Amino acid sequence: MYFFTATINSWQMLLADDMMKDIIIQSLHWHHENNRARTHGFVIMPNHLHLMWSPVNTYFEEANEWSLLSFTAHEFKKYLMKNDPGRLTPYLSTEADRQYHFWERRSRTIEVMSRSIAEQKLDYMHLNPLSGRWNLVSFPEEYRYSSAKYYMLNRSSFNFIRHYADYI
Image 1 (tube, one colour):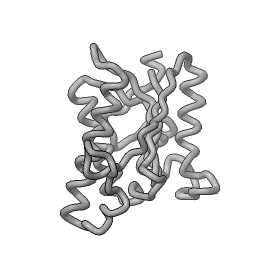
Image 2: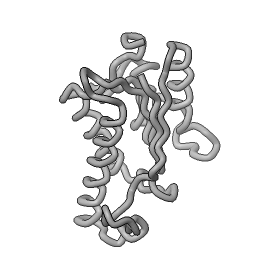
Image 3: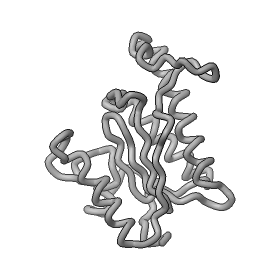
Image 4: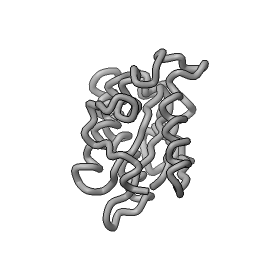
């Protein structure tokens, strides 16, 4: 099991747009449906995301990270080109291998080695929308783009979430 954090390039607020968050949800669903990864917890903030997930079968953590970041970047570009091309300008890349650069190059991954660490990471994720900087909701379970409702109310609109205790 791994705790993964990815940040939008230059900490821009690209993910404040719910359509962008839905693209990430679509990728998490794809990873689940294609038996590549199981998501145990997540939160999608306006400029970053946190995931706690496990690779399935022969898929390695790095391959899942790459597929999530690559797919979402392509979908962000496609969506913005169609709906708001002016918003692409801050993401123009200076790299030869890409036209746009949506994600910071240095995502962070740590292995989750125990249930207590898993619980600490879930608490951190679920409380993130309430923090003073964001103040997006009053209660963790109110934030739509999070697994808090799954853990706190045993309800979720995301069928790809699997309880961490079944995997560690």
